[in-house]
Image (cartoon, rainbow, N blue to C red; front, top):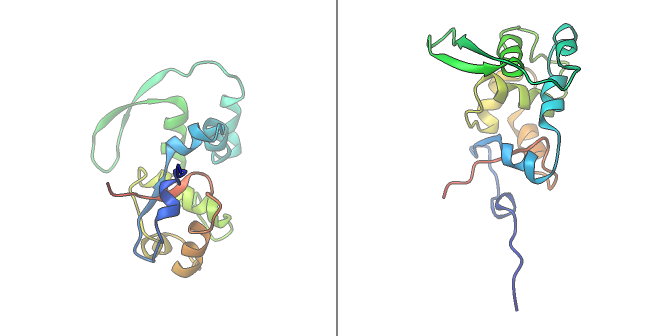
Length: 147
C-alpha cells in the first residue's frame, strides 16, 4: 500500500511558540498571483504605477536601519516605502492581511503568534494561532518546518 505524502504543515501541531512565515513556494504551487496580492497592499496612489504588465526597472535601495544597499524592482521598492507608514498595519486591517504585512515589514523573519501579537494591536496570540493553524492556508502563511 502506498501512502500519500501530506503537506509539511499538516504534520505540525502549532503552538503559541511555533514560528510562521510567508511560504512563497506555496504561492507557486497553488498557482496564485503573488504580484497582484502584493500590489493590493500598496496605498492607492502607488498601485496605479503597476496597472501595466511592463517590466519594472531595478533600483538601488538603502535599508534605513542597516545601510545595506540592495537591488529592488519597483514593486519591492514601493512595498519597502509602504511599510514605513505607521498606518500600514493598524487595528482596522483584517487579521490575515495584517499578519502578512508584518512579515513584509520584517523581511519575512519567522515569528510566533506571541511575537506577532506585539505588532498587532488588540489581536490576542490565541486568535492568531487559531487562524494560522486552521486547515486553510491563508496567503501562504505557514509554520516554519525545521528539517
